[in-house]
Image (cartoon, rainbow, N blue to C red; front, side):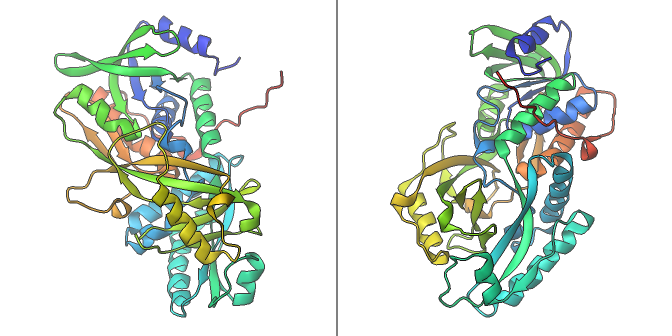
Length: 413
């Protein structure tokens, strides 16, 4: 049976006469994680996505499953610890999509070697039994051997450490497939444009099938807003004057030929002018370089890169690559917008925490914001714990720490 057949999925929605236990709005990493958590607890679950699964932010990542070295620099030990644990869990649960990737921090100042060497030892310790490789300090010769075209002027050596790499879009599709194969329903091109209420409490959603323009009134015990950059839009369907919960930050990546990063190791630049980390990562037979952190005001499904963002990445890449890439060398550019938890005070977006947060409105709308792909499973576990409480669902334990993600079978026509 083809569980991703849209006609079959629509038949399941139309034949459902009773209440859904959980309706999730949003088919990116956060929404998929919530729906997967819900179906594995045997709750009757429906996920609605207005476009393609992972259409927005969730397909515009640096393709890394990582603890976050820069969060360690910021002193956010708890976030790094949680992310490293989740990195190990995801590698076990989706081994067809997640693999180890070596990263090298080139060292040009003598004090950076001991500093990053010690910091990455802490990174290893936090990973514990779920670690995927030990970091170590490299000599200048070893660094050049692993990254042949690294900039050698003033190079003193490097530090090597290990993180995870994955295919974000494929993981999203595999999770959607897994949801549907476990008696849940995940459907795309179904846009929620209204929330239903009974006695001032959320009791379901009204959605439009964008393929047919047919309207669906869907009743549910609880509704989860997991719409990422569109979070504020959904909470205003609940309460028009509600405060915004997310602020938006754009990040871009450029794609270059593999000749600009010879070898199998990635480069990690630990600090740039605006406090970000910059990565140059092998990706199939190309290399991805990113990312930026530019505050934006409007959520867009197809954001465009700014000229200054492109110049920023090229400028930093040229410092660390002996064959300096230029504008004409860029093969492709992709841009995504991050939904960051809106801070109380005015902060640079690069310094805003990547923790996730759960908010419950007076009418019972459950909204989850923040987070990242690496912690999508934990985010799903946390939000379903809260949603089950709001809905009065039978308490059931999470099993997703050891639940394998479906490997999509190849189909030949």
